[in-house]
Image 1 (tube, helix red, strand yellow):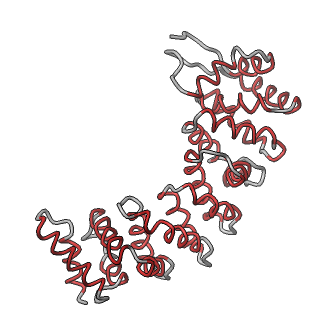
Image 2 (image 1 turned 30 degrees about the vertical axis):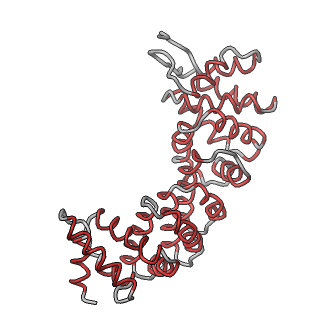
Image 3 (image 1 turned 90 degrees about the vertical axis):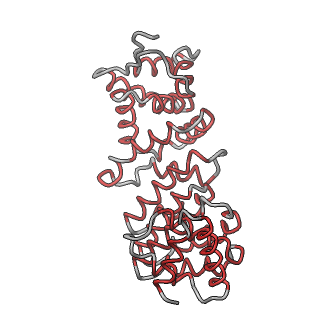
Length: 324
């Protein structure tokens, strides 16, 4: 069908006139049902970003969800383009897939989309693997963790980065720490990461993630860290303590206190030694009172913990000045 006609229909989907929107929607749904307009036709006319907006993407995604009840055939056609050699087709297909996740009808196609992205993670083209990980990250479905975990060892470093950041972003949605979550966390903190490639970025990402976690999640990850401390990068731990002291990262201190609580005597000794080293240079200062958060509660309780070693560890890191 003529590209200009399809382009006009797509434009009309977001017109201010409700009647025109209704007519355009009906014509597009009918044409897709009769196969006179295909997914490939829609993507082809959407390659030029100069004439369409995010509203057009949402409108077309909505059409695809409604056509044939969001049929598996349409999703498969979309993933054929997502996995194609044409980067422009891949980009448009990726936007349409992501838009579906924010629209009514998503649950109908959710399984097919997640399966399609999982398959794309195994594509021979690293650009497609990278895009699949990025799309998983944007969709925000925690079930993607099990598909992403094996790709932390992808041969392409950019794919590994995309996978790791996707899993960090998904972590706050994990309600129970399972085997996948445990393995990801230990890999993220492990010596396997090349310090020159990832170590500069991971401490900040760990801090951002911890800031979104509740007490139960922090405690669970801390126990895993303490029980598997032989796998954890000491360079990373030292940098986390540094961030805690110099940038007043209360979420990191809360996590480290819990790691200390579950640690062996040898690990406790190492943590305390590192904390004492950094605390000679500066102190964590929290002014205007404690914030109301799980992180503050963990630290506040640790300062009065019956275990003198825990009190010593916190005292070595934090000095409370002008509370209130």
